[in-house]
Length: 329
Ligand SMILES: [Zn+2]
Image (tube, rainbow, N blue to C red; front, side, top):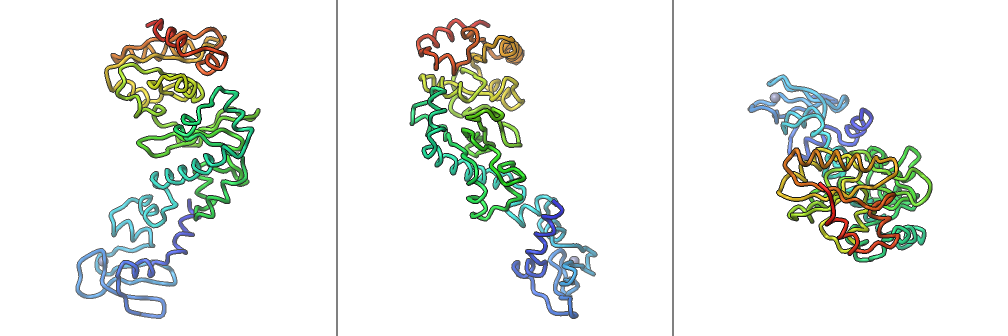
């Protein structure tokens, strides 16, 4: 961060910034300009800019400092907000979201170029091209993201800070199927599922946001909740439009609040694994929801199954519907 601030100040000298914002100064000495103070009302100039030190000082109001300090005082912003307003590459979530959208778009374009990605999707039972497009699914082959984004003016440092690339410049989601995660139509994170043996699941830093595709189901009186995105895709592909996904069995506060914001029944359809961890998580969640006045039921898949494997191994929509109807409180 310290280095960024210095770079930023070098790139935008204080005098240039002031002039861009219509400040008029006259030379007062070899390295000083003087003019009316933008920070207080005055009729005689007492605002000095030292171009050698790149700082200002006002003899009228006693304020002084560097470019960032000036922006803070002038626009009434915090230090961080001032940085953000001086450099769109720094900080604001809005720009991070645009950058994530760019990365997601690039990965989406790659999906068809890599047969291994397509074959992984079909191995996980995901074949419907309309759904694949709707979910914006992409593939990170590795080795192209950094060049693509730096060519658009994003700095290496910003890509690093967002977690899109590692210290060597390689894609963090290298050889992963990529799902963009949205919140209010903005991309807030990317989820990557390895198609090989590398760490299976990976998010970029910054949290998973709310429930997946929540806008689609928020008005449904019955919601099917699954824990993984491939489960979600399988359930959607089977025709259940009222599904959402918590991206793990532990719901964050936002996700819990979303489920509780209306009058509905939640069908918790977590993995049924041999070590019982999915069942325990489902029990706890059902309990949490009931405490909040929400009707919740556990859908019991056959032993050893998650919704994805249920469909991949031949389960059909009718059978799944029967399991949902048989769900227990
Ligand atoms: Zn002043």
